[in-house]
Length: 281
Image 1 (cartoon, rainbow, N blue to C red):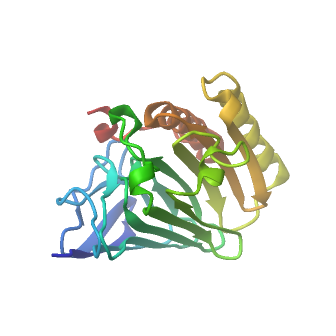
Image 2: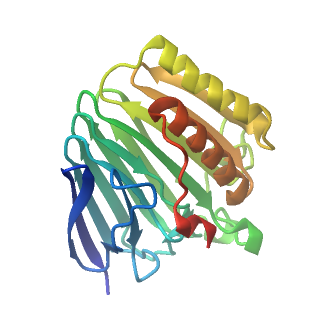
Image 3: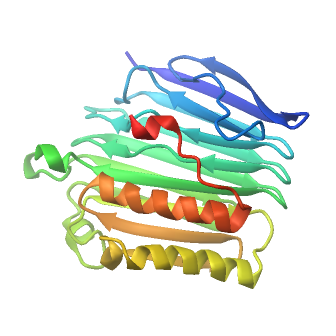
């Protein structure tokens, strides 16, 4: 039996407080609103009770952040795409962020299991004056359990990922389990099986000073990190700054992203970091 889940989240200001209206259909929902850093920022934990996606499953998430609202959204655990014998499993996210609204999309890692057939799409539409931070951590297989994504006897799986900021940045690629050139080449994943991408994006061009401050802060953190040789920061467009890292395990990649997120929050928004409680459990 396939699961089809839909979740709509509508964030708006009620006085100085960001509130959220949510509607769900199927096995996808959010827990109660949390305000660990005051009324302005609404923290939400997105949960999928089945615990993973198999062939034929579809999860659709739609977010609308109205002017002045601020939402931080995370997950309590990894998103898991399991083995499929036929149909694809699809997760799709579309977020619309109004002027002066802020979104932080910070889920825990995505795990692509051996022989999965998976698609993960993310689209973020930022109005002028809107800003967001987001990240995506993709782990191929379970290296710690010696379960390889690209096992020679099970080389039919693939994972397609798309991250889009319309008119600013579009990244779309498919990792196939039998594509040794991509997975092992020094021009590809270089033998690593975890890739993390983090970005700060805005609906209006960043000033040169602001872009340089964000890049400098990320590069300073990278330089002193254990993943310094496999991480890099760049700004391919004047509305986005990107950090990319390759790793052998999720934990060091997530550690680097969390450190940069903490600094970017202060540099870009003059906000102290407030890690969600579920990150510590």
